[in-house]
Image 1 (cartoon, rainbow, N blue to C red):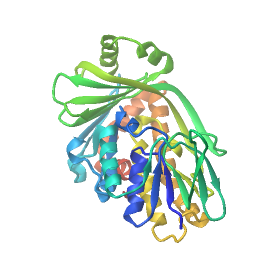
Image 2: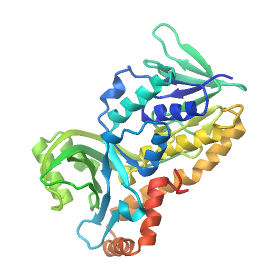
Image 3: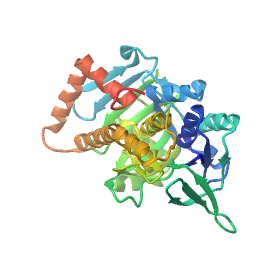
Image 4: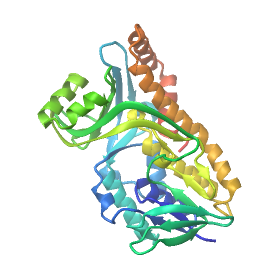
Length: 378
């Protein structure tokens, strides 16, 4: 049987290859970028305890490079009510972990190379051509395209596009990202603060905070070219006085939209991660959901004599629907609920946050779903 072709050598593609390789599947990875391109990643990742367990199962958890999140403070600006979540309440060392994407990529790359998994850079896959027994990955070349025949193609890079059953919603917002130095230690406390202009999340990273700051398009555009001092002042005003910021660096931004494939499987093809769904970052589900995609795909293929068989892929796709749509629905509901300016709604939201803080069983239920997904299992 031909091997499984994986398109994309980011964290998801590398982790998926290792999960499949661990159970005896032959895999091969193709990436359009040069070999050193993934190592220049500037993104910061927030990984759940469930993701930690998945990465540990393939001996690829970068323990010493992570900053644990032990407490999460959730509040709204200009209205009462807040919720505090604590890892100890759930019997965990941390609710999540924060690390630079490049650190995870380096560790996964070393593991892939140590396992002898073929990894091809500067190999953009232009088309997928399935037949009854396999699928051809046509790879662009300087002189002429090359072809590789696989039993199954896994698309682990890119975004949702050209899908017949695609769901989309443009939030008319941008995520502004930066690393912020702070006046006092963060003590492993993360913040999710909802404001009328959009949520802002502070994630402990080393001695600093990684900031994910949502603004309307016109407000974001005004800040994109502003000097650091103006950006810092706007961030301080937006967040409030619970944390005092002393400087910022590593600025970046990207537009926010919900994009989902209703069906993530095709003829000898599976789309995972951002190629299957792109969510608003408010609930931090992006890579965590993607790793659950990979975990369940590996489980679905474990006993399959033909990994690309339609029946195998349909079963996997059905099994992922609940988790995918629950994560997307929760993220979208948070933005719509906390972004609404209907009279009286801030008070109602405050009551909800206070109730969540006062009801440990409800808080534990929500935490488990955020950590392990809709099935509460890694």
